[in-house]
Image (cartoon, rainbow, N blue to C red; front, top):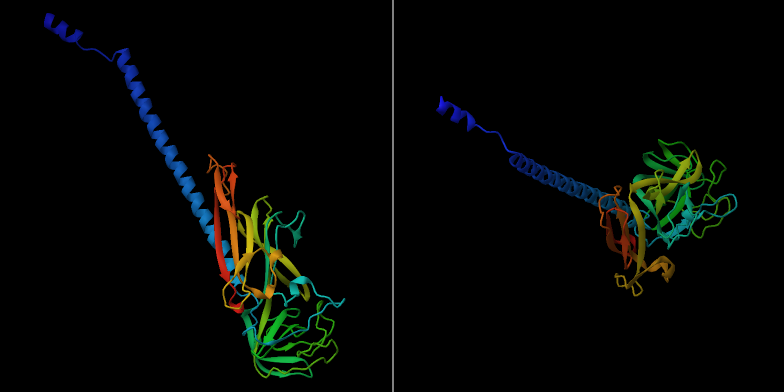
Length: 350
């Protein structure tokens, strides 16, 4: 009996101290796991934001590089005679149709500027480019100068009102199609009143004489291409975020205008420098903002810098400083930022 009582009295539970120690150890384990989870989540958020930032930066640069390098392209080399027969009712042309200046820009944009209903960001740069697009083209079969008809070897994709370039690598002319509808072999370049810009003459030769027949030139062969104009700028989208926008020519049933499209969100700033070759050795002697360019015909390359920022505002909690446009700029809004810079050679200027 006594031995059985001793065995029962030796069976004890946990003491209060042991329970407290166990609870503390459990809490430490939970805190450790929680810290590891939060650290892992923060790392994932950082890496995800950085990956998105890099993807957007590469995407924006791809657009800029593809379009800017084609500045002045007219289907052949730039060593051809050139006739611009476009005109509007007042005899003037909007600046975006000035094909004599294939590269233009604006430095340090002022406040209140709107491009095609999109508000542009103050203090940023703007770059404009004009070129003929060989993705839309037709080969010339023959040319009836008297009736102002270019005949393509096949049906062409151009609509009435489209701005077109025709070249045979000896002579190049810029005009507006006045008829007929698309999917036809004929392209009419008469004067007429069916389009808003119109042609001041049906003659495509030089010198340009704004009379009915003007200076005649016959294209016995060659290629017809569509004129492209792009203005790249930093605008504010519908969510109040800065984005890279591209303004382009729009043909609305023969009425010519422009429209802007958002390309990449999170582009906070764009700065552009232009490389001038003053001694014709094929190498830029210096890079300057557009308002310091001595002769835009000497521009052979463009250096573009983009300041990208993340959409999340909780990544760079400790703040961040980036080197942009020659200065170190601090930021403390929790957004991650990265600078992308590239130099683009203008193929038709080399």
